[in-house]
Figure 1 (tube, rainbow, N blue to C red):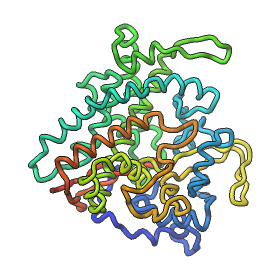
Figure 2 (cartoon, helix red, strand yellow):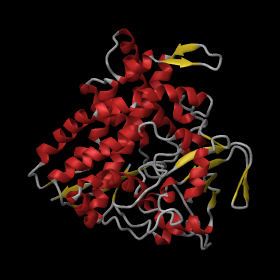
Figure 3 (cartoon, rainbow, N blue to C red):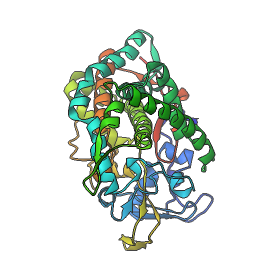
Figure 4 (cartoon, rainbow, N blue to C red):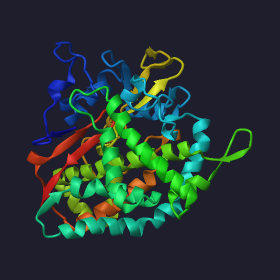
Length: 418
């Protein structure tokens, strides 16, 4: 579901206190509240300062909002498990969890991740630069002299799916349909909390497509990621080697098609937004393009495309003097962690020259994003080619629209003019 914004600098300070309709002064965080999520930072600031271990009774979850707490929990897979899923509504539903590496714990996760990492080797990612640049230029060059375009729908959300589909070897004629299906899986309508039926229907279409595609690749190998996965060998705990099943390959492909598309599309949307709101930072990038790789990291810190990750508590854990029971749902607010003043000086200011030792927008530890290097490459090339052609732009806030999910945050539409 999308929502029109008007001016993005919405004052949501009144949403930072208590349960809706209550006069209680403690902060209230609702990941399904569309108005609150236009600007969740006032709420997250209060959580960090007042209740760093937050409890939401309505949706039955806990949340950690400080950088060190999010980092520590991300590294501690013994007590913060991904096996029941990492998305709140998935964790609260009876839906079977997709058997993908993002929803596994070590040791099962370890061997599968090692194998999947072969699809994202430095050699393979570096070799993609000419193709990514060709794709980016192909979208941007026809827009030169147009006076304006939608930075998300005409550009940002097209690039990542085309790149991933190219890596997988998906036929070009099918790529737009795959993008639309994966996009729909992440959307939530107003008031929609249990989207199980809709997601299962769309997921079924994706699964059917990729099942047929995996079967075809087994019969007709090609020089692509799909073929690499089909021929890779997985070593079990007993030392025996085997190849991935069709289901394992399909689940992996569906995961990267969805997560890879959403992360980069929202990153590019936030780049269009933030560099319009901070024109002095944009001028630095125009004058000194060498700053662009660091700017990508700063944008990820400043506006995390996926600001909420779920975990299931295993064993009792104690944080900030409170014990959380076994089996509880814990949300790791990486978007809040990116604005924690304990970790970053002046965290609410975009600074493309900021020295960033680390951030948690790609996760950390065992579940660090497999496609992080690809996302960084796409972000760098997209900004280089954008700023070369369009060094200055404004956003038409009256026509900008946001998407709404419990885990992904960003723009569905971002009209710019220059």
